[in-house]
Length: 196
Image (tube, rainbow, N blue to C red; front, top):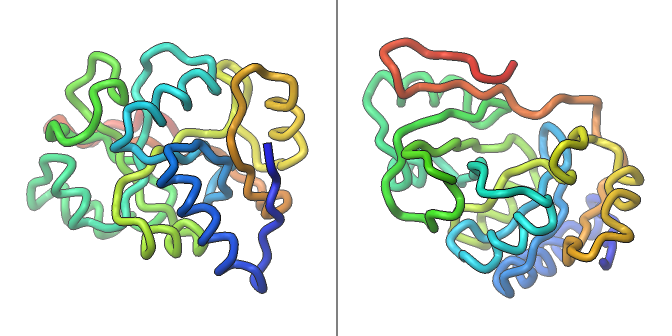
């Protein structure tokens, strides 16, 4: 479980390694604008299966990080009203639940016909998207049932002796205290907050 320290000086090198990791179908721990996340290529079924083993999670829906609104429209059904709202909250700490288009592996969604999408407001993730033009998984870096965290040592300790572990850890130190993103369901006639 290699750990790469992230700072402003080595960002290009880190991005290069992260891109290689994603293209190899690996799962990595990555800092975001909320908590540390488990990031993998959302179009790669094997990578998603690996992520579920690492999280010890059965088929529960996994939120997706996307590059921009254009990608969101390819992945989900978005009407004018929803688009207006998304332009206001993205990039940022809001995951929007929308009706999905069948573009990604079914394993990501459990039994649901919806998808949770988010554009993180975090330089490393945005730089990653410049190099890799595909949606990424955006679930918190923790074993199911344990709390999501901004503390890197807690994450390393949690996965250290597990049979299934992340392939790479991007260590940006402890992130600013934050909760996971707010989740808002936009599929009904009224917006519904699923997680504050």
